[in-house]
Length: 411
Image 1: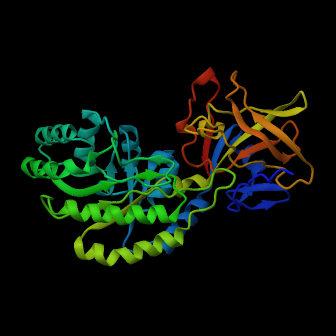
Image 2: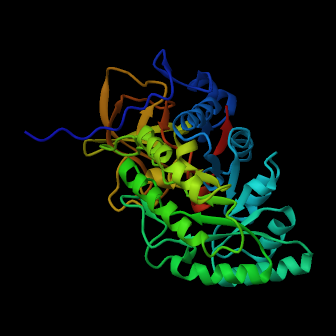
Image 3: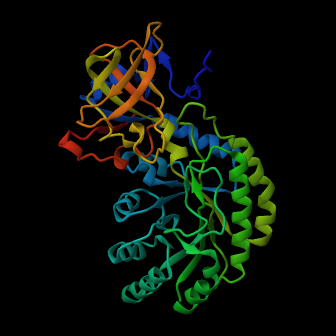
């Protein structure tokens, strides 16, 4: 007898009424009519509100919460998040323009990422955005631009720590990395910041992302604070801000369990008194993207054909990897696993069938669900991919095979 297959974590963020998923306070079928065409992404603003409230409940009150808008840069989403959080973190000139359109004070916007252009640096300096410097060479370029503009640039050092976030989906620190300045080189860089007369703000230490293990995040926080305290001894001025990154994960695949946020928060509460003693006046920032928005979003496509090939049922839809690369398994997965998927207008039907959900592209990679047990569906039904509020449309090859781009709505 074969062992039972692992199941997806229960997803209860959206109500189901009359067998139909409810998004933004309305049935999915009505939302599809309102949008006017499929495929589309829908982001539920109340789910965003609830996620921020959950973090406020569990994190120490002195923690400042920033939205890493690379997770979802849709302008309406960014505007809404700006009303809920304490700052925004950006990673490109395009994101910079969107962030500056929000009411967020530019001093609460930070700009990270390698390869910033001189135009990006000039705009950020003029706006008063904090530049998280990724290298000594970038520091020198910023100093020249500040002199040219007659403005003191606000800068922080992005540190490549000498440790990594264990069990993270994507490691951003430890060992050789394209991100940040190796921790052992930072003291010399801090002396140069003082000599150049740059406006030193603090440190950005980000060691990994998409982590579901509270113990790993707790350990990373402890090591991050210890490293920041050590580096602060060489700082040219007091550390005003310490961004300790994020890395909080969400469950995507069968067998994954939710992050114990309460445990993470309790550990931070334990650490904060010593941090405040060693770094008085320092604002501690946690930067989150995926954890804030991913579970508030869905991707919706419509079934245009049922096809059977040698006993396997294929539901052919008008959406696919060109809109949702991550759900297709081609965005970093080594072994392909299914995102949680349902038939949105037949969520709890008794009649089930084993199907594969595919898109319209001429490639076998265009697969949204591989041999999943779903409610029996018909042409015209709506396929929903959960956990789609982060790294969805803008992380996908939308120009591939020249199909129309999916719409996005905030409801």
